[in-house]
Length: 148
Image 1: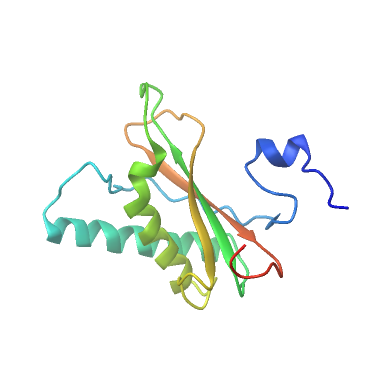
Image 2 (image 1 turned 60 degrees about the vertical axis):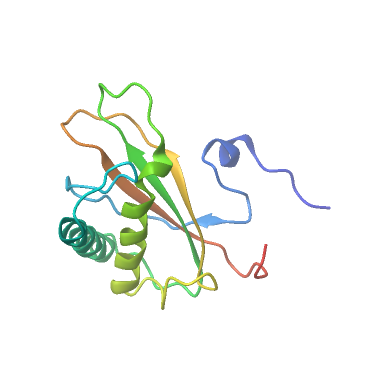
């Protein structure tokens, strides 16, 4: 018989089969992020993407995120205190760059679907500051079957 998920695991957006890695929550520094509603020039977008990728790799190394055969990543978007309504999935382009940064740091061999089983947006805590920030939660899905 399968154990029902605890309220605690449901509140955090995890299933009981997925184990969050201790200390595996790289906080990105206050850097410019890419919003899907923005339409920056491709050269500006490339520079922002490279900065997010490099910052994530450094943050993952600092957080000592271990190497994983498979991983699931939650990205938490922390809006400014004055933001009323926002859609965390609008920062998916920033999350993609961050997942690439995790691969650069050696957390995963690659970021293809066989290795990274999901990249999911979440609304993080509101924060004081002039820009939206992002943090990542790397989850070890264990030995679950592919396609689950």
